[in-house]
Each structure stands twice: as structure tokens, then as C-alpha cells.
Image (cartoon, rainbow, N blue to C red; front, side, top):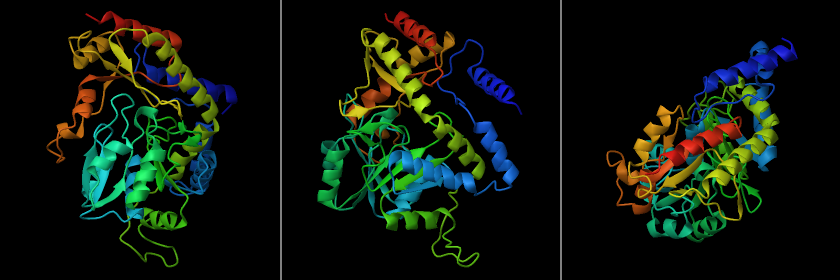
Length: 384
């Protein structure tokens, strides 16, 4: 297939994903050699494990500065692998923010542990050391700060607290790959960092995940559990009751191509962020997520709070009105305290307020400035 044909196909796929003049909330974008590497992986006949898996781990580790990186089938199994590496089990407590994507809470339940929820900062929407400290108990095994929407928690303070209590930390960086805090990559400031490469994420493999660590003992334990608990010294001999969390060579091939164009992806995501900020910071009735000066974000998604006085119809009605204009939006995460059929926790007032008022707008690297203007104009027109 010629270079011109490949470029035309990639352009057609990107255009089809957008769908006429409708603006989706997110879509995958392909930047270069995704198809070429995928065909190479198919032709090699190594479609489960293979060279692209090893390359993806090596290249990812080099980018974030990790000693070890292990791929997984998705971001949730990455967290599961991290929990297994740290020995989370029945009777343990895992501290998780009350406002975030709650994969970490659900995995804890499946492992017999109890998720315990802390409040988040009302401006950054991230967990703080002060909020975490209020819910620590002698049963706390792990703290899981979530870097929501591409923001990064104040990890120096959280790590200091964890060290003083003898508690491990897993950074859930599924939404913050390539964001930094004080010059350090998200996911690289604690015992383990976990990432997601789901279709809407900063780079994508369709589904996929990664864990990173500096500790050889954790790397060995997680690698063992990832592949059925087998060391490959003898076929079918299980050292531990492992899982199959492996990423395929086909998915890894796409990931390698995405990583090659990461610099451009970052530039375009930051352009999208800055254009939104220029349009929305002076718009009455909305408040953008706040980023500390130490944070250099690469946003997974731009999100804001809508003032119920300026938008009395409410956030959910706004979503319907935006969709009527061909613009897909998303609500914020549900607070853990609102999901009483799943979790036991007291009131989380800040998390619940965010759950009612946060609106996430379309965010992807090929979103144009004209499209952002259209989105912002429509939102502004809905104020009462």
C-alpha cells in the first residue's frame, strides 16, 4: 500500500469517526504508522505476545523514565495487577477519591478489600493529603490518588503522608499520561503508576493498559500474576493463582505508532486546552477545573462546573440542548456516596456537588478551533 493511499485511508477513518458536522465527545486519531505496524504484527504470526509488546514497554518506560513497565489488557487490569503486586486482600482498606472514575474501587471489592473514599479539592477535583489523612485507619493498605481529567495530585504531600504511615501508593494516571508535576511524569512519583490506553485516552491501543515501577520485586510479582502465575521454567506450572492480563501484539503495534507521534499529540491537545480556556475563562456561569502552577497538564478531557444560577435548567438539560445542536458532551463522574448500591460511605458534599454540576466538553487532538468556537458559542447561548 502506497504512502498516499495510507494517508487517504487514515484521513477517511478520522473523518468517518467525526460523522458529518456532528462533534463527538471524543474519538481516536491515527497519526502515522498504526496500519503499517498492525500489518507487520499480523504478518509475523505473533498476534498474542511478540516484538511490539516488548517495544511498547521499552519505549513507554523510556518516555516516563521508569525502570520497569508492564503492559496489560486494559487500565482496570493494570490496577488489578498493581493491587496484586502490593498484596491487597481481604480485610484491607484502599483509599480512593470520592469523585473520579471508580475502577480502583471496583477492583478492590473483587479482591475482598474495602474501598474507603476521601473528599477532593473543590477547585482541582483531586484528592489531597489532608482529605486522605482523615480516612486512614490501621487497616489502610494502599492509597490510590486519581489524576482526574489530566490534572495531577500534589504527590509530594501524599507520598510524605503515606511514608509516615507505612502505606503504599498507586497513582491512577489513566487520564493523565504525559502530564507532569514539578517536572516529573504522572505515574512516576509513587510505588506504582497505572495507565489506560482505551479509545478516548491520550494515546490509544483500542483497549490496553500499563503499570510502571522502580522496584524489581513489584515488577516480578506483577509479571507473574499477569500471565497465569507461570514462570515459563516448566509449561503449565503455576507458582501463584494468576490471571491473564496480557496485551496482544496487535494492540501493542498500534501503541508503538501512537507513541512515535506523541509530541504532536501533546501539542494538539494543549492547543485544544488553550483555545477552550481563551473562550471560557471570561464566560459567566462556568468555572474551569483549576491546575496548580506545578502541574503541566495534557488533558484527557476538558471539564467545567456550570453555575446553577446562570444555568437553572441544570447540567443534564444542558447536555440535551448541546446534543440537539450536534455536540456530544458528558456529565462528570458520579460521587461514590451516590452509588449506595455498591459502596458504603458517608456523605461527600464536594464530590456530590461536582457530580451534579461538572460538564465535560469534546476533547481530542483533531478538534479544530472553529469547532471549539461552535461548542463555546452554543454553551454561552444556553445561559438564562
